Length: 480
Image (cartoon, one colour):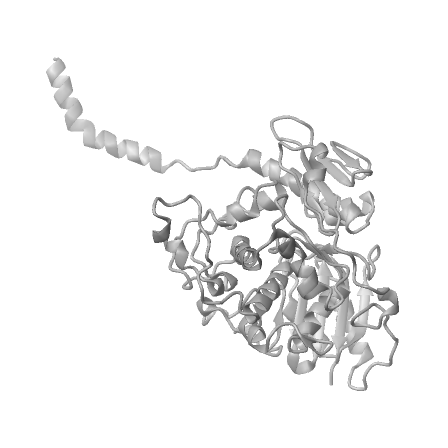
């Protein structure tokens, strides 16, 4: 009997395997294995936004909860209180109650803005965080003429500018049909002069806000300065080791990735920041949880041939920034480089370039500045890379950032060297225009053919969707 049952079972085994496989095929992976990490990252993000809102932007708690935190689905607490603590003396914020998800903390540091601490550090560790004590450039910007300073002389509009059309374009930017698009400021520079400047209630010309990925264009400019100086080369490999370390590091295929490829967002490395993991792992861990931006950037696997596929990744930018650090050498030189090589030279006095807790610049996103400083940045490019007669970046570098990444040609042609380009499908704005582009609507648009720079700052949330090219189209209607 036992033998008969055994033979019967053997005969049925293919059928049983079929049923079993069908059962497995009906399974779906719905559980969010990253949920606790997402909660930690969310707390860290709120801590950074509250800290910078209060101590970098000098806004009130009411303003921060109303605008800066508007895109949070469920912020912890409200302006009246909750499970958070603001340490006004230390200029720091703690978010969350101790439990399965750790309390997350951020602290303001002179010269760089707020830095996120890891879960195992407290406010007692603030003095261990980096800061930049480089003195400000001489002179009072309020007494220095634009664009080097903030003294703006009122002038009549140029004869070829329609005041009514310019105002209509401004209203188009501010009076949005979508409540999720919140314009904070609009600044239009024509022929080097500010011809329109407008701010939302609660904001003014001095208010710093986060650039998000507009920072990438600043990173590219700093790298370009070193390329022009011969200390970096676009087509050289990045020149550092990778994680996890290969038993034979010299054979690691990632060694062949070039500076050009990471600036073109075509490194071929794993797409960690996409696929629903942006606020669970990847660069979010250095942005909002205190991990090293450098270690994370160097810990991705190669999944494609470099240069063949465009994929927008924060870590690609940070690889270029780390290569810049190695080219500069010493920590002090690196820490002071953005100020000495660029910001101080063109009057960007209100700009703070933030770091992680290890002192590495998070130049893929974490820069705080205002509309006028970004207009100066745009003017540097509009003027062909010169400022007050001094060449800061070469025309060759400007050509590089404006040239479509090879992997985008025929597929939109919308991205160059950490700058965004007019898509191939658009014909309603000049093809030679190019733009920075940051989350929540941060744009600096350069239109060389019209001698025009446009800066739009936003605190968009939800689906967002504000188009810098639509804005450019509307403003161009005012120029005869």
